[in-house]
Length: 356
Image (cartoon, rainbow, N blue to C red; front, side):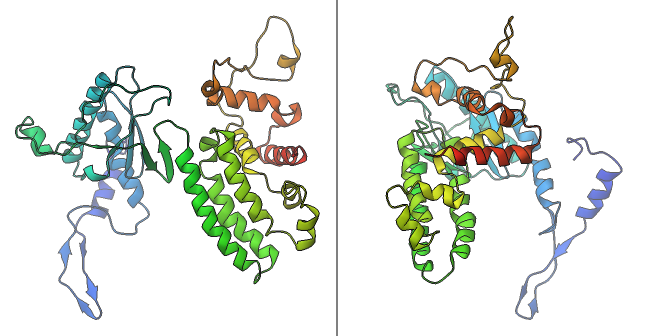
């Protein structure tokens, strides 16, 4: 707490809150003997998660070469480079630093769950074999790696991080298939429920179960190929056919895309643009730069942003290209709307009206 800037008297008061505590275990009507709590915080306390965040706050400072991204007890480190061997040596130094930090701070590092993912273009063949990365134990590092028996980190082609499957080419193909499998299971359940519950109940279930699955990380995996997103939209359409009555479904038989306007639900290919625009509404980032010219032009008066030039399809999928390009395509009254709630309403209405 002192490292995070929390000093006396609050620091001392919190020390008293944590010390001289004990616990028991109860099985049926039998209580065990009391044991002292030597570490940790009271179970179920509101301050427990905050205490953990303060405890691991200094971990990022232990990394000298990699950037750290942390969520609770998950740590993801990234290092970019042109030479694979040199990059691996730099990462190994940071891994050793994490092991030492974990030992000094009383935290156990789970080496079995640690994975290595090398991100690269699918057109780039990795001819060289990277040196193995090893999560050495503290005793191994203390003995200067003499008689080291530590296992190397497993290299994988895809890793699941916070519920998102990231592959080594950033194609998102495995994540799309993962979502599709979950939706297919739900689709079967929705089909049986459609004979037993009213449509209004099915709509509530759709937004609670289906829409939440599609929305999670959509502004990330939505940058993938359109053919991948079309797989999800096909499944989404099958759900919408269960959210309308038989008469409406027959009327839309020639074009089931009409169901999206009827149900007021955005298809996943459009929902991606909706979320991307909302998450970058009135934000200060490196992607948005207002157009500036010596002469007054229509683009300047309408408050549009510079769109960088790209050389290939992969450059076209980057956020620095997609965000300003998307915002520039919106009408001026929507782009310059000062209130977020009205911006969301106008944006969804605009997308629904322009559905094919």
